[in-house]
Figure 1 (cartoon, rainbow, N blue to C red):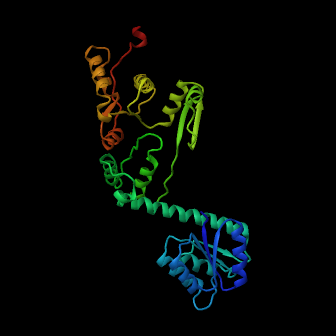
Figure 2: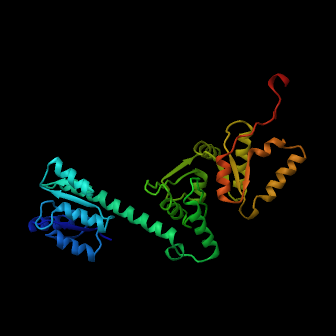
Figure 3: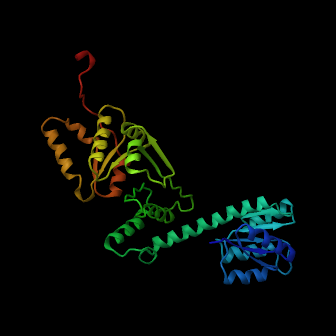
Length: 331
């Protein structure tokens, strides 16, 4: 969809010139030669950006900016004027203008300003939609199942918390949407939301399974060992979700590295529907049989609730382990 631009200037030739120029750049352009007619247009249509002159007849550009900000505060207003004084620029920005450009118009600067303004407007609209989604989940998001209701209830509860939040799920289930909804309803909603997708994968898996095509950063390494080392370097903590042999192998390597003193990072087993219970019983059995020192049971945490898991990881203190191996002088 084309970005809709409203151009307001009391000079018809200027309106025609800007309409022709911006239309060639792919914008949907509407022009008006007075502030009052511009306000009437804004009342009946939506625009992504308004471009306005300052010096106009019955209502000047500053008054127009204030009226637009008062009725449609999400719409950026860019001033394009022949008044090139510092005072004019300050007055325009104080009135709420998003940007200030002077005539004669530099098309490159104009397109740059429009690009920033349209992106800003798009982000503001997205945040607004996500806030509405969190406030009214039953009507704003698709999903009326009991499971989805529990997810949305959790979103509402964690949004006001300062705790870190782990969102898990298969690719395409909406993890980033939920994350954005949490951010939009949080005390940090005015700050930027930065989505970063990063994965490390060995070349052998790229060849067998294919790599995810929509990552911000994909690190391809030669071996599984290099993959685990890279993940360890990047991580502040480890959380094991239910999985198969690969997950078990990586889980026990993380524990072994902790035994060896390679890291002192927390490790949590996210025990979805009791998935990890048999493994925990097996480890407890190994401790009872003397194959695992009892103090090393503290090398991992087990939680079923995601908030409890994050709280436990945040407050984790690496245990003081007893000696497992003989000192050099004792060998």
